[in-house]
Length: 334
Image 1 (tube, rainbow, N blue to C red):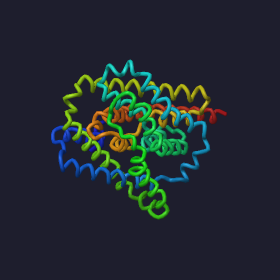
Image 2 (cartoon, helix red, strand yellow; image 1 turned 60 degrees about the vertical axis):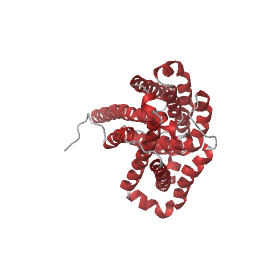
Image 3 (cartoon, helix red, strand yellow; image 1 turned 135 degrees about the vertical axis):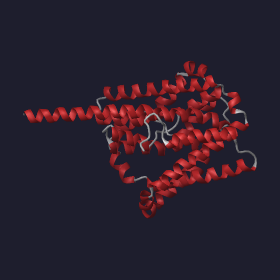
Image 4 (cartoon, rainbow, N blue to C red; image 1 turned 180 degrees about the vertical axis):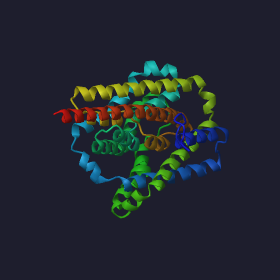
């Protein structure tokens, strides 16, 4: 039986169920400590498997298109943080201070890999360049995001960030990733053939982080502190940030003379933010009680970017089909 188009995907439904479960039955005391340990192990395993899966050859093959990569990285790590700061007079009144910090944290994150490449492929963009840009963004984000958070997020509130967070990132995220890369010649093929295992660990680790984060936040009174109007405000804020990012990446790529295929890659890699990287990083960077409010804007932004980019990808694809048909007719007449 085909799923109706108006229903969200299974993972989105699981996220909603997880947040609901944490809100009604939050883990506390020894149970919470057990979930914290399990979550840390799951995140380490996640980055280990991603390290084993990531192809250095694919990254090197697309690395020569340096103008495109610089534009994507500038959008991800420069324009987005500046956008979050510049829009404070507009966004801050819509949400609570904690949620605004979550929006700033969202702006500091790397691009997502899987969906950026999938949408680029669907829209008939430059896939090798998308692989390179998205992979480089994720890898550099392990180093850059903690620095950006200390520069952008910390001065605007007390989210409980610890200043040894870069060391924690290195230990909990980068070390497993490097270990996976080093072992890739021996286990890379095994990991690649077991995409279901990677998907299970990927989604399972995110659900664990969401449950432990929201459990800690609920115990601290998250839903008493965040009114329904603030959640609506987050949706509006995410829509504003995403719309500006899409317009800027599209306009800039055209002004700089990139091809339509490169424009597609720039738009989808330069406007997306990674839930898979962001939630584990939030757990490492912030105090447990703050993580729930910090990741809420990211979770909402993630769903919004998937829906909007799916529509954009289909429009790009229809345009490409139209161009091919016109070229075919022109050749026939010639």
